[in-house]
Image (cartoon, chains in turn green, red):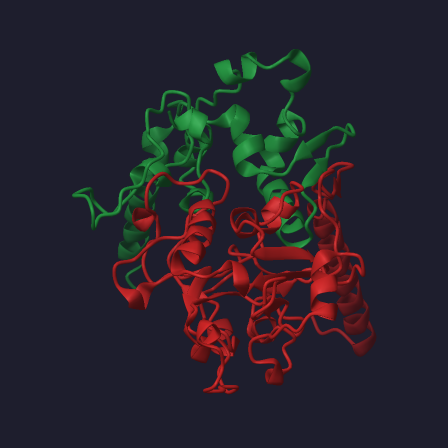
Length: 160
Length: 267
């Protein structure tokens, strides 16, 4: 082969450089997200209410499809009650149902928006654009940004 | 190493069967039903109707202050922002004069009260909504109860609906509305993002809770809301027994907002 030695040497160097990150991180355990499934807000609820709308395994795998379904049914079909696989009924509401348990607890954000014309406050609203901690713990880890919180927000009780 | 026609066809057939079969297996695994045995239902307090309609009794809206209170109730509930530049204005309910509200039918000898009163205007929730036809993503759609609703999730901000609406009932979020919401935000309704069109929704989120729209509640009887399809409803009685006018009826959109001009018992 014409200049075979150089080609193969370069290929080996390329492959080595390309795979450095894999070898570099090999054997190191990456700490997974710490999802608070047992928050004080959930513990305060009676035992019968502590179960999520579906099983945790189902929610972990399918919450995005479930949320899409909820959106479709509530906004487009006017069906605002969800009957889960056990026959239990839930109001379809991101704010009132999901966040009743999964809201940020440590937050000290007042739910007041100031008009920048009348005040000196800036125009951005990180207080409201932030995901609740529960969503953020996984979504930050996997670098998937949910768009829910550009319109929806946490209930007032949680942002006090 | 050459193969004959028969061998070629046989192998091609086998590979095709294999490909189709494996794709079926993969899609069969993927297309799992999302919700296990889930169902959906209407809210227990949901107010049923075939055709929601509103009557604006002008005898109860004598001054701008009467209308402003109603506007404020609506805009506060729905987190409608207030932009300093009128070009960015977002409005669900607003006020206009007689000439603009009922363009084309101008009679200069009309009663002064009618000619100079401010008229409360909002989305007409037409029976034949041109905005719904214009929307390329079906973000604007007509509900079975007659409400022309918007799914903000689907709106791509093309503004075809704004061009299609003959009443100017739609506003576009050119800027981020959140910093321009005055006072405390209302937790009962989400805000919008830039690049989304919005308009009055006849408070369908309140109707699902068994409540009348916010403007109706605030109007002290100036706004009458009900099912036009129900012969015993108050709106139906007013529309069928008294003389009401609608905006631009000649366009055939069949607005659901009726104006009782010079109406009331004292007219």
